[in-house]
Image (tube, rainbow, N blue to C red):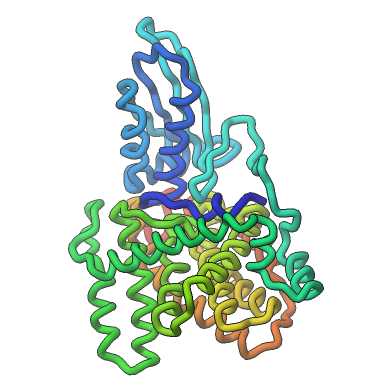
Length: 398
């Protein structure tokens, strides 16, 4: 299991798998390509081709490739490669029309890229325990918490990285609650965060609290949809949930920055476990792997901040994921807008509810987090491709 640096990636939206990943693949190909390329063909397969225009996949790739050589995009949504639905192939040709380099890559979610023929498991695993059950037992045996396991495993440098992550998250919230206008893409979706933020101030404390959480999640998700700088948590499409919960608790409850960083570590650990044992790719397991995992991460973070025991933190995360099982990924027009933005707001509120529910318990329950991860993976594989980021089913065809 990799460092949290590979989960929390700082970059620009709107999609980690369809924008950040292909951009990275293009950079990798250029680094490996010999000199003498006269033109480059880029072929997009499966989900990358089906929703790539809405996700700006072509723009992200061409921005990297065209300064080196003219490039053409070939769209093949009907062709799904066996390793992963998000396939992208680069082929370079010289002046004689001869192929001088070719490579296929897969964008497997969260901005991660795997070359054809490589294992999807990371080569630089640093965590010895990759199941929450084992980490929970370690916590109970040592009296330490999840964030301390992260600190011991990653070393002190992780805290400065998480501080940078937190600052980018905060900045996205604060930009988003001030921004107005219509989001790009042609759907005519207006930004709502600013109005939710204003309206929340007029309500009593409980309704105001909920309204602010909505506003913060909308703010980050709208920034992502507009191509702004965000943090994958665990993906671009679900990037509003963890920041919304943490920003709300930071500003309303006065939790210090250091405590927020510990909560980020805890959240990241749960997200990392899902990423390692299943997937956080909407194109592979549906939106349960994006919004569902983000809800689990945010619930764990909230429970950490409110003094939850390791068992209560695990219970919070388990509920955050369990109650998103089967959630489809069906973006309208392939844009990370409808239903993605509202789902972020709703899931942020559910994360706080999961924390509250677990806080009333002793943390013991029947189905543990690791089992829910297994079920999510199987459910995702059982979902028809219509509902996994192809814009061919569900809301996408209304």
